[in-house]
Each structure stands twice: as C-alpha cells, then as structure tokens.
Image 1 (cartoon, rainbow over the protein chains, first blue to last red):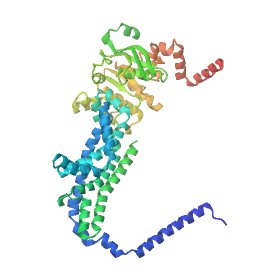
Image 2 (image 1 turned 180 degrees about the vertical axis):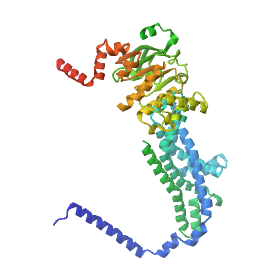
Image 3 (image 1 turned 30 degrees about the vertical axis):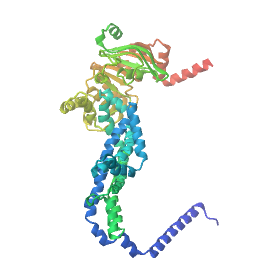
Image 4 (image 1 turned 135 degrees about the vertical axis):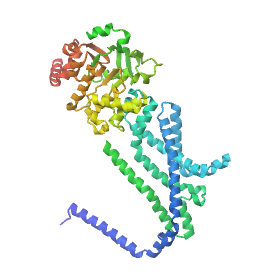
Length: 261
Length: 271
C-alpha cells in the first residue's frame, strides 16, 4: 500500500531528526573534550581575567558606545531636520552627508580621525573625543534616516492641529512632532545602539593604553598572554550581557507600540 | 434677519470676511471665486457634496491652505497679507478637525494646556484651571488624566473642542466634526456645539448634519463645484431651496433611498 502524503511527511521528518542525533553523537565521541575545554574555558585563565574585564573592559565598551551614540543621536536629529527642511541647500547637505557616511566603513573613519587628522593638522585629539566622533559620525548617518522616517510617520493632522493653536513651526516640531517621532523610532534606535556596541571594538586600531582597553582588545591581549581562547569566549559573553537585554527591550517596545495602535 | 445684519454690518462686526477667494491644487481649481462673510456671534453652516470645496474654504480661513487669490480677513486682520504673523491670528481662531487630531502622547488635560503654556505663556496653575473648566464644559471633567487612545471618538472630539476653547478663541471653525464618529456618538458632540452657539460663539461649521444646520445655524451656505450656489436662513436653503443643484443634494442627503430611485428614473427618462 502506497504511503499517504501525511505519513510520508512524518517519515521524512523522522529521518531528519535521526540524522541530527547521529551527527551530535559522532561529534561528541570524536571531539577531544579536554582540549576544547582547555582552549575555550580554562578556569584558571578565566579567573585571571576578573575583575579587570568588568571594571575596565566592559565599562570602557559601554562608555565608548554611549559617547558615540549620544553624539550620533544629536547629529542625526539635526541631519533629519535638515533633510526635511524646505530650504534646498540644507537638504542637499544632509543627503550628501548621509549617503557618504552610510557608504564607507566605520573602520576607515577611525583611521582618518585617529591617524589622518593628527598627522595632517598636527593636533592630538583626546582618545574619547576620537571615539565619539568616529562612532558618532557614522552612526548619525543611519540615525538621521531612521529619525526622518519617524518624523514623516507622524500624521500631518498633528502639525495642523498644533499650528491651528498658534504654535510656530519650530514649536510644533519640538512639542508635538518630535516626541511622537521618537516613540515610533525607539525600537530601530535601540538596534542602532546594539550595532554601535559592536562597532566600538574598532577603537583597538587607535592603539590603547591598558586603562583604555575595551572588551575586544582586552580579550585579544589576554589571548596572547594566556595562549587560550577563554578570554575571547568571555569577552563575547560580556558583549551579549550588553546586547541581549537591549534586544529584549526592542521587542518589548515594539509590542507596546503595536498595542497602542 | 441675519442676512440684514451681515449686509448692514460695518467692518469690525465681521468675524470672517472672504473676497474673491480662489484656490487651486495644481490643475484642479477647488475654489472658484468665493465671496462671503460671517458676522460676530453668527453660526454659519456650510453644506454641499464632497469635493465641493467647503473644507478647503474653511482651511483657507486660518491659512492651513494658502489661497491662490483673493482676500481673507479674520476679526479685522487680513490673514492673506504676507506681513501678517499668522501664528498670532491662528491663536484667536479655534479649529476642530474631522479626525480630532488630539496629541496622542499627552493626556486630555495636557492636550488642553500645552498651547496655553507654550503659545499664550500662561503659568501652569492658570492653564490647568482653564483646562479643567473647559473639560467640564464639554462634560468630561473625569477624563482629565486619560490619554486619547483611552477615549471614544465622541469623547476625543469633545476634548478637541475643549482644547480649542482653552485658547479663548474669538471664533471657531468646525471641519465635519461628526463625520468620523459612530452614529450613536454624534449626539454628544452636537450637544456641545449647540451649547457653544447658545453662548454666542461665532461658528463656521462644515457639516452633513442637516438637523443641526436647521436647528442651530443662523445661515446656511450651499456650495457645489467650488462656488456658493445659494445661502440664506436654514428655512430657505434647507426648507425651500431655490436651485436645482441644492434640491438634488438635499434629496440625496435627507433620503438616500428615494434619491436613488429618482436617479434611476432620471437615467431611464434620458435613455
């Protein structure tokens, strides 16, 4: 008797599970667990990382990210408003800026600001300023587009109501449109914060002193010192400690926005 | 009586004066030469089929639409004069929209206080006192801390009316204030508007509510195709219309079923 469609589907799924189980078992038998454990989770090495990996590296990662995000957000808002301006040159400047900085790697900006500017202009920028500018200049391009979309998503009737009450264009923007726009763009802005957290690792290019190490650099340094992957694993986990709650926050914000509509 | 009052009125008793108003959107001419005025304390209802330009006329009064030609004067200030600060004029004109346009991120009370504070620079206690008085006037004093999303359409529209009133406007514009409401919620909004009319507020109302126009309006204006076809007392315009276009429109609005039948009869006769 030929198999019915449903029976055949169940059989295929069963085979797939079987293959998966076999693969896992074979891997578990063949793998050298001792060496894997020594490479990725050497308790002695892990112990040696603390507390510096928290008090220096994690703190610096958060600091660099927030510097870049704060500057990027402010610049992004200005760019978004310029992009929507009725004055054509403002729009041209904003569009050019956004297209330029969205199109080049953040790495290049780090090199330009970290080495190019000091060489060309013979000024030494403070490390924190360099990080803030590098992350912020690129982040601003993305955030400008996000904020612009948010402002445009606020219904036209909101501006009309505000203007009908005698508010000036600027006042209507500040009191009525922008607060609503930020509610709309909170989830994508949080995503931007997650991306910046990871991009902050690019500061390693600048050549850091010990107290300036952030997670990625700290991990690499410890890797060389201990000849173990453990620091990389722990640095990775600590990135997740920052980004997973943010991702959770995005989901909750999105759920809340969905409910409010 | 009202017509006499308007024609005999001197400039400063006119709340709104519109002369030779034209408005085009690209190729489409929506207003094709409008002359009309509203006296202080008068309630004027504008009726007409959709696309007749009645909402555009209303929006030209507070310059939400920029007129293509003509003059619009509100309470003695010519709003079409490029040197006039429109923000100063708008705060004297209350506007109520079809879609309410309450600020969703603010509570009902904050909706009423924000412009008082930011535009009229009233301090918080005074703004809140005025806001609460106006919420009470529209029967929603218990909803001060509610957000717009928590209110029914009828309640939202009454908050919107209270928001406009909190600016102490000299006149009020209503752009189809009940068209977006469920039928059972229309009555509360109309009751508030009736109260305003009784208190002597100058009102220009674009509406499809014929019973409201008949009971409350001093004057009814019928528009079609971007011009005023006829105007006069509700008894004349709604009760005994002079023009064929007005009659057709009223027949359609007052008794849609009958209008359809007569339309079928018309086409039958034509063919």
